[in-house]
Length: 256
View 1 (cartoon, rainbow, N blue to C red):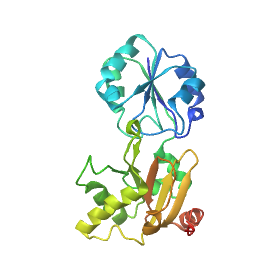
View 2: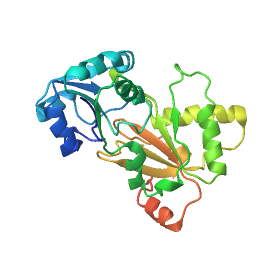
View 3: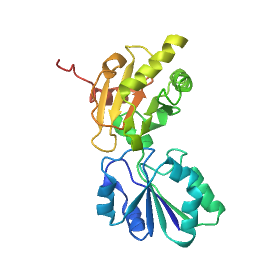
């Protein structure tokens, strides 16, 4: 049996009861440590789960998927994913391969950034396409996020931006870096999608201690959000209740 288990967004205690019961009866437990970051260490997970954890980098999870599935053919194997297993398509191949090989799979869902941003106060069903903003060294020429943001804006839909991260290298894109990447494209396109007076929402550690700040792009760009992970939201035209909610997170002028 292969268990694909979401861990939620906080610490070792965010796993569901069903997920914890599955982990404790498994012969081997893998942890995806390249798609996101929990607010605890893998040692914290080991102590709480009472299981040794094998860290799975991108190579292990993607190129080594067949090995994991082979193990699951004769043993109980858990593959732990921060957030929800399928809020992104990264782990679909592991599921597909297991089904193809006739290995039984149990998927245990949990909270993801896609749903957790609801606490910001914008209506979830009014979000358009989610965009990812990669580091410049990996994707030098970046147009797609800008064009999707433009498209969502024209459709009057909010935009959630997920920022690049490489936890195994302790490398996390900041909100400032993400805005600067979009500003670079604006200089070329000059379509007015990115402007200093644009209202934006900067978030850090959603699902944990939840840092949320609302302000003009030029203000948010220079705000301190503490530790990662981060995300950035561009609101479209809002309902008055959404506007009222955002007032709760309005940034105050920081003293110099």
